[in-house]
Amino acid sequence: MSHDADAADAEGSVIPRRDGPILRLTLDRPQRRNSLTHLMIETLVRVLTDAAADDSLRAIHLRGAGEDFCSGADWVATNNGSRQRPRTGDLVRRIPHAAHRLIELVQTIHLPVVCTVRGWAVGMGCNLALAADFAVAADDAVFWEPFIERGFSPDSGASWLLPRLVGMARARRMLLLSEKVGGADAADWGLIHQAAHPAELDDTVEQLLARLADGPTVALGLAKQALNYGQHASLGESLTQELFNLELSCRTNDFKEGLEAYRQRRVPKFDGR
Image (cartoon, rainbow, N blue to C red; front, top):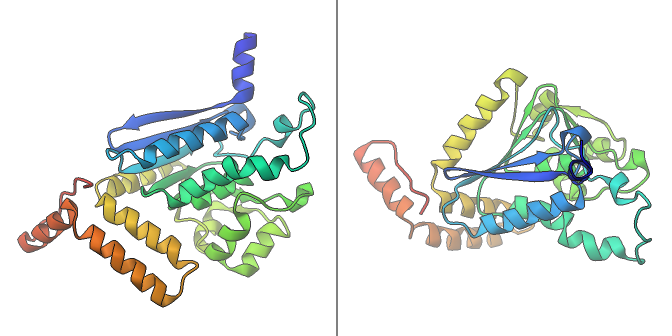
């Protein structure tokens, strides 16, 4: 292998591919269990930012190359001693525009995000999957938040995501005790959308993606926004937000198509507009 190839493997990559209305993103660093380098995180932020303004997209699919989804941020590569010691506050300055921005984009983009999880989903990789609207995992996949076990506190949204998904008691088990959670248990807990036999995982994900990509995209995005908003709002505030969202969704072509399909007693054919 050439020096350039070695360097490319060390940096890793994110492979974006358009598949009709679906944007497919593959974390491509299988020799390191798809651990995320700075370059990979920056690429994901840039691609998702562009996707947010692309009216032709209707769903996003996130997966890892090879046998694992993602083993987290590559702290070894980040702290390998090859670069000058950063100034004090380096993490505080840099992380909000990189890892934090990535989690926020997956959580808030007005497109449904589906994540396929095989093998390991660790640390930031675990949180990336949990930030998606739908995480579908193999029965034998493993979700793990090893921050405490490695001597530092949780990051990338773990302390926000876990209590909301599985409650405080299970969040403590995952964060304070670093307990690993298998794919089947993750589905039973409500940590993820669904678990499937490894041989059936891809078909399960594709059926879900097809359903979402055929849906009323604007209404889906507004519903996603309302769910996120409701996590920190009162009932009255949420009702008001729903009202404004309803005003917007009722002005779409898909709303008109939904009514017409209901009148004609047929399945609606939404165009995402």
